[in-house]
Amino acid sequence: MNVVIKKSKIKGAKKGLFVNGTHTFKVTDIICPYEGLLVEYDIATSDEYKSDYILTAKVNDWCIDAQNTDTLGKYANDCIKADKYNARLVSNDNLTAFLVAKKTIKPNSEIYVWYGEEYWHDHTHFKMLSLELRQILYDESSDEFREWIEEHYAESITI
Image 1 (spheres, helix red, strand yellow):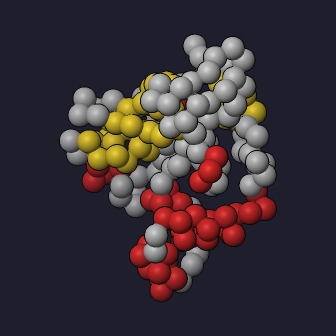
Image 2 (tube, one colour):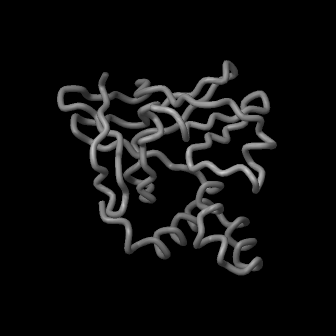
């Protein structure tokens, strides 16, 4: 396998996904699969469903929940730094998903992927905001949303 699980470089994070010491991923290379339980989209996105490993890229009304699996893809962290993202999650009509390199990733590098605004909107600190402020953030561009996340989570981000 061309990836390994090690202690993440992100302060406060536990495990992270890294390129092994001899491999380099090139742009569009498949890094690893993102596998898990198939869950209907309406169920996976409901307030009652709890998982930090849901891929909500709606494919034929299904999502992938990797919470109770050993799939390597779930160990890729979101570093909340747009210039550090080196992978993306890609899904297809066959209900499969993969981490794919979006730039060259050198040996021993940690793999970072943007979890998406839905993930951060569900995060505890976001839920504590007033409805008015949440609506403003929902309506803003991704860059402004990332700036807000960086500002409010800066103490836990050291890359």
